[in-house]
Image (cartoon, rainbow, N blue to C red):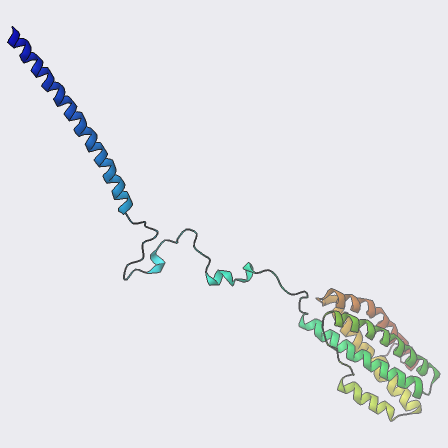
Amino acid sequence: MTRFIKLHTVLAAAVAAAVMTGAAVAQTGTSSGSAGATSAAKSTPSTTATAPGPGTSASNLPPATGAAPSAAAKSSPSAKSATGTKASLARADKDFAVKAAQAGLAEVAAGKLAASNGANAEVKKFGEHMAQDHTKANDELMQIAQSKSLALPAEPDRAHQRLAKQLQGLSGDRFDRTYMREAGIKDHKAAYALFSNEAKKGKDPELRAFAQKTLPDIQEHLKMAQQVSGLSGRN
């Protein structure tokens, strides 16, 4: 009986030792697995940092997150703020300003000649009126042009320079008829067409407003010229 009890005690101790050994082995395996997984994760290279291999086109690679903008994007007009204080004038507006300035200078020069060389009192009076009105209009146009950095001519065009030279060589009735026909009627018809076009189609607000404001004066000048020359209703 005593031997049986001893044998039973030995077996129980062996079983307990076996159980404890198995638990230790299992815990050791779990720790090893975790460490292996961590090591594998650390040794795996990042896909975003992988350089393309030989023969790999850059266009086939996915775009990197947070990539710096390209040079083309930096230089794009849409990425830049607007610069410049004044928009450039349209070609038609520039042409109008230049032609209007030349026509105005011609009217002033011819009007002064008429005031001094005219034979008829009405022709003299008309010439004085033209010199005054067109000087005022020229000054206003010059101010608008200066605000837009637009240089205007300082003298009439060649055709009107030739007319001025012709008028200087005339006197009496010949002077009156030539002046009223050319500077009085012909030039004011041309000016009316020039200013009418700008008043309707001008792109620049200030030049268009100037044309609209001056147009009635030109109409009045033409009417006066026709009356003074005796050609009212036929020119």
